Image (cartoon, rainbow, N blue to C red; front, side, top):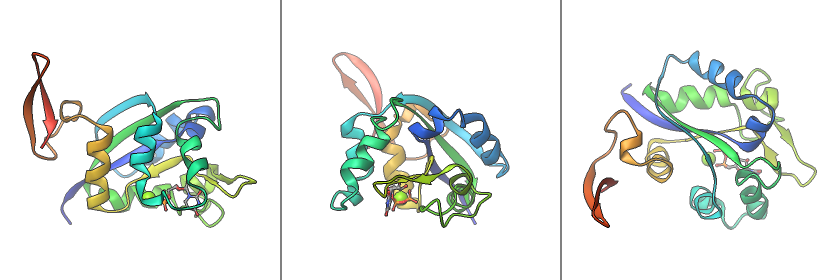
Length: 168
Ligand code: UDP
Ligand code: MG
């Protein structure tokens, strides 16, 4: 099994419920390395790109409200990249199944997630599900210079006289 990267997002309910430390402790059981982290507010544009594969689902508009913080009056999320052997599988294991009612009770989603009356799964954490998705998501949420390792090829670009690295 080779080293790989995965994107984790602690969603607005996770921040609102003060679960950040708890979730990071659970993830540290994996012995994976954190190679990037940021706290940010999620724009509608970033949210729609992140969940573009779900845009035809009936719950999509509410999912966008959820990840942009409109359901919780809490527009912060914490995004992190974990790196190491089987990172995607290890983090998904700790996150638990998508549906919090079906998730292992000791997983993050099993312990802290819930299903809203609308049917939306409010499940505390996002974790990439395969290497292609991880790469697409990491490039969406992070600039090359925000990541400690050179995960993917990048190039220097000059924007308004300032040099900056961008994904190729
Ligand atoms: N989701 C939902 N209902 C569903 C499927 C997904 O509310 O039937 C939400 C849930 O918050 C989930 C997110 O949409 O985490 C992204 O869905 P995906 O199928 O990618 O699940 P994940 O990869 O997050 O386990
Ligand atoms: Mg997914």
